[in-house]
Length: 452
Image (cartoon, rainbow, N blue to C red; front, side, top):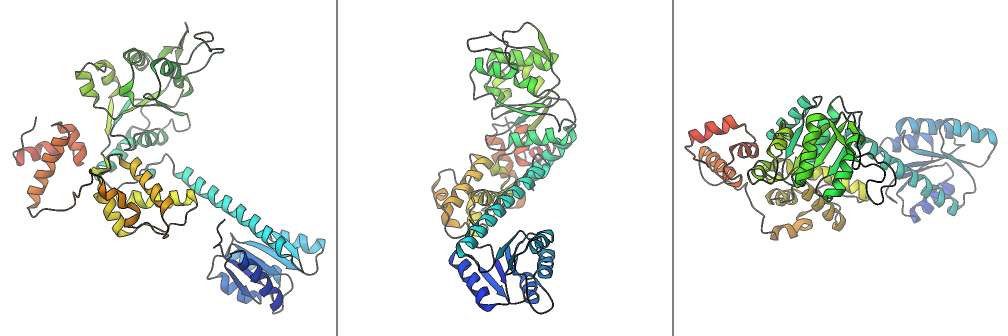
């Protein structure tokens, strides 16, 4: 329970006011007191009180009901508890009608007060969590869920918008942890299929037999344990989108089955004899180089071209380091709220360390690292020591240390490095650099760079 939610006690009886405040402070709460309505309103203008205890009968022209109404106008989220020495049905009804959450009768019982406050704050905590969840859901599957100021990622976001209402198959390529599923969701939820299902299948997680049943469903009696007909993911995604994650891991037989679905939009359930037609958009993702898999005979060329109608290549996090501070701050806010930890932010020294790290696990690794730091942090703000173990990782690098060379030479070195990382593949190197292929070809010619 958060003990630092402030509480206000308003009562013109000094003994009653101070006694109630003392009980609450003993429970660990921060408490302010006021002797009249005007003083209470002045304090409420400066502090966002979670709970206000207000005496019903007070001198000075403003009684408890009027004070409560003004407090609720200033702080609509505050819970107001009316204190009265003259409890009647009429006063209770009036208090509740005007917005009081509870009313208590003098003399107050400390144990009753503690239980009441605890119950109200538990409800507030739940409401706060629900508000965060609702905010998350309103943002979810929208483009601004993908946090970036990287030019290449901005181009990708624009592309997802352009293709969102097409039925064309999309192939999303990128290293593990770069956010392939998030981009797939952005495509789906931005288009005319947004109200229909978005179904995810991890192709690497299942054996060939299980994956076939998972994708296409099965008929009763198709195999031992098949006691009834079951729909597969393709049928469950009807009208919407099926996201086939790690498509490069499927077997040769399933490659043939999937090719037929893409070509004819129909398939047989396992053990079935009747064709099932389905209207579904296919988005596939892989961390493999599928064109190389085709050359090695591990992936069907015709299926590759069917999947690769629209290709999206996601840059690794090390190629979009300007996004690391944005992502880190986002994860700090979200995860600290989810874990109930009061972490106010992340220091510049810590950010510098995160920017220098190479992130082989990409955005997913960054999220996990932030969560670990939040769990072990004791200072209320993530600092360099919370990530000190990253400094000893062999993959750490400092690419932002600029050598004493001209800007042109720096650009030439960046291009050479990108080509080396991508094995001479100009298309992949241009994606990593955040420029289009024609621009990269111009620069190769300008700097007289040869490539494979």
